[in-house]
Length: 421
Image 1 (cartoon, helix red, strand yellow):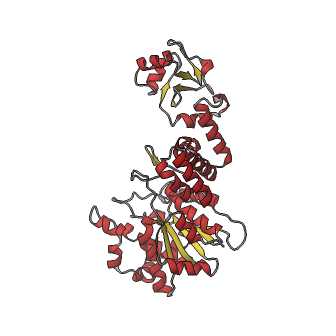
Image 2 (cartoon, rainbow, N blue to C red; image 1 turned 180 degrees about the vertical axis):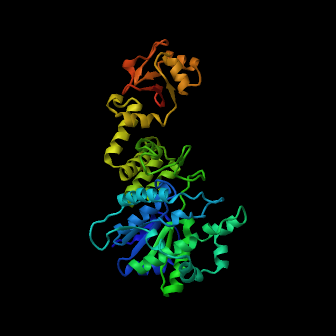
């Protein structure tokens, strides 16, 4: 087995551990069972979840057994960690649907091949649904000193503001009970998660020590931020999701392709399985040939293939090239073209009839019609990658791609679009 802790330290993903020396010793004695939990607070996992999921995946590749836990029970309650206001509770039907969707996503990243490292995905509703309030208070709640619960950051931060309900206050007990149950059922001795989960995870470590007299472990991953201090995995439109219906594969690919030079090497370490030697070479390329964006292309290609598959990666690359005149727009599928145009300035019109210069201005590709006319005059206006030299040109139905779309371009790098109908 490879030394997983050395790898995680090199990749700079470890934020906290209960006792790294003790964990290293436990790992050296043979395979362990490790779990990470994912609450269904949305219909899809996002990039922050993926960072944790890939830690779990790396443990499996290093010879350990992973368990992915979907919070069918905790998702009904809501984790107060990192929130300044009370969560809006979803219905049990919505949570059940999201549990199913997230379970499928988890299964894409873990191996279920029979053997000692075969993964398992479970729901904590399995052992929580039948637990009565009296049993919960007597058997679990009695092990939680209120003063310690109040001192946890996720609780204390809320008490200084709007406060929190007993429902959210009890969340840490439910998560701690999950660790206890997995310790009992599957001899799970390590929980991993995001750094915002430290209090909840160590509550489980304490509970197992109090109830079973056993010493188990906790490890959290670092919060991923950009060089400018903002949170990674966010766009102007919201989170970067793993579900292609929420973030299209093309948008997903472009997000990573546009990574800042200051961020890209760390992102390669966190989100890809590239070796130290490969990443060192890419780091050198960033320093010596930043204009080539070799590291960004590697990141975008590896991640898109990992999350969406080779076919969607090929479609995203083809669309990216075609939009900038390096491929055939006609060969793109309607879905791929629509996804690509969703990421650029565009105009929606009921029918054709307006001159190209009007469409360029209406789409936001240029700031005015006079700027559009200037672009045509200077040879920098393109319709579907064909240079337009007539300022009065009016696109016709023959210009439409898939009967609905026009791709506009100004110069080499500015893209816009028109959707008809």
